[in-house]
Amino acid sequence: MKLIPINIELIIERIKYENPWWVTGVIDDFFNKMKRRLYFNYFFPLIEQKEIRRAIVLMGPRRIGKTVMLHHSIQKLLDNGIDKQKIFFISIDNPIYMNRGLEELFLLTLKSSGNDSAKNCYVVFDEIQYLKNWEIHLKNLVDSYPYTKFIVSGSAAAALKLKSIESGAGRFTEFLLPSLTFNEYINLMNLDSLIIPSKSDWNGNVKQFISTINIKELNKHFHHYLNFGGYPEVIFSKTIQENPGRYIKSDIIDKVLLRDLPSLYGIQDVQELNLFFSTLAYYSGNEVSLETLSKSSGVDKKLLKKYIEYLEAAFLITVVHRIDDSAKRFKRANFFKIYLTNPSLRTALFSPIDTNDDNIGNMIETTVFSQWAHSTGFKPYYARWSNGRYQGEVDIVALNQSNLKPLWVAEIKWSNRYYEKPNELKSLIQFCENNKLKQALVTTIDKEGIKKIGDLEIFYLPVAIYAYIIGLNTLS
Image (cartoon, rainbow, N blue to C red; front, side, top):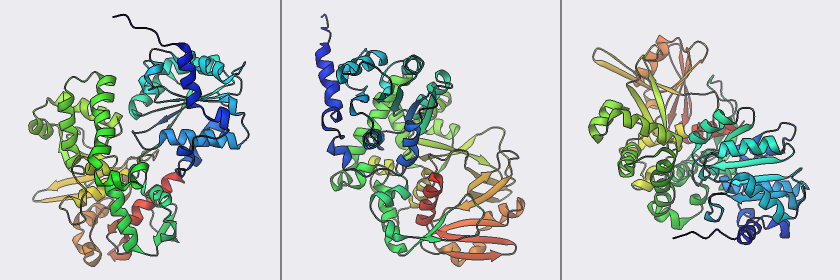
């Protein structure tokens, strides 16, 4: 059967529909009524930057607000007096645009808006990963239209970044939008009144410290965030929270595992990948090896390694590598930890987790690690070692990247036990002694304070506050 080409007039009508501000002067009310993410203040200046001829590549996982942020950017441009006819938005994943290049779509949009010139136009291409060789198309546009600002978005973060680096050197600026941080969650839920400034002498990577007027209330929201907080749309919807599997799993996880990754990497057995991800999600925060994963799943180690790379590319997981008690990295990285980049993914696959659940400790760790998703220049490690009968472990170690010496350490606990009995932190104390560290951070449920064991100063902080601080300091 011969396919009939889509009429150009239909495409132009669709373009006009996607750009309602050409008529109204404002973005659709659906987007306008949503509160801006805190990351907006760091993203929008890149759009305003006209002296550097670069396209902006907005990357991040599915459903975390990229399209909303793009529309908020359009509204900000309108508020700043930019001609409404010179701001274009095109959603590449719409089937009506199939098999059409970026330049063709750009010129059609230019025609639809009534412009004779592309000069000083702002062009947004959403969901760019659906266009084959998008990076070549975009580079050509940047070179061909030096006075036009191009902004694109996509969901397969690592794959987009790789192509961006390979083909867009000097032409693209990448911006990674992570899942909602606990800091942003508090802001979007209008709970900032719970937060108060605080001071600390801890030497970790913290510029701003905070405390709370009501730790019980903050912990309630932290638990809610752990189960539902990674996606802006979910935190406001009771309907989605009552059935997270139907929304998060089918609309986010399944689309990534069953559609995005197979189309990007040519994966044949999507069910195998699906099962593998579910296993990783359930054991998020546990130490694993390719050997044990291969034995338990029956999948070849080489293929498992690729699966892990693909899942990282889709921003579903992050891998944390192991060091020993002297902070030395292993020559062969046989063992490592895998964390979900968004703790609410586990809720979607299984069920909401209770604070008394056996796995709550690992999910608290997962939540803390997820706060660093947008942090540049910081790569966390964990320490694990065995000396005869004694095994030790420290949850987070920051290494100086120039000399690979430990800068600071932290233990992530959902317990007040170690506040009352600091001497039981044997692994932490031993690691600090071995590496001449004078301070360490230990999280609690609701206890805050400082205790000394010999020369070691231990700072105790409720884990909800620590998660908030990470997000706050990553932004600043």
